Image (cartoon, rainbow, N blue to C red; front, side, top):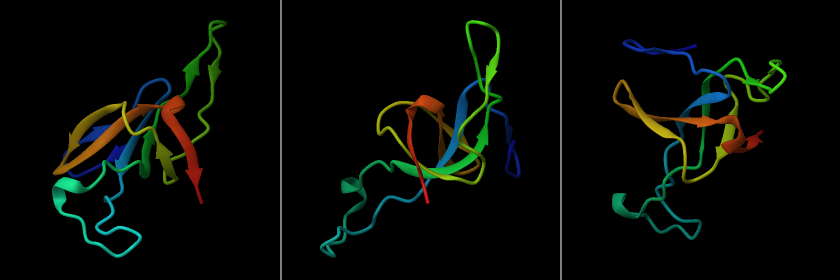
Length: 101
């Protein structure tokens, strides 16, 4: 369960709560980007996960991702929520593209 000073969040089913990592401040060529030109981050830390997806047979399929992992997720999708002063995202596990080592 994700814990902040004011909010406890436990995603349901196959949902994952992600705290996005900061957007890049400069390009690979060393050019600094203004705030308006920064891309929406696609990588973040898993802060909480649901129990898993319920199959048509009523069985629960366990989650692949775990709290604390760094993940890459789809650019568009999910739901942004406010946690403290930060914007976090809740996505379905299928919207996570990769676990980053």
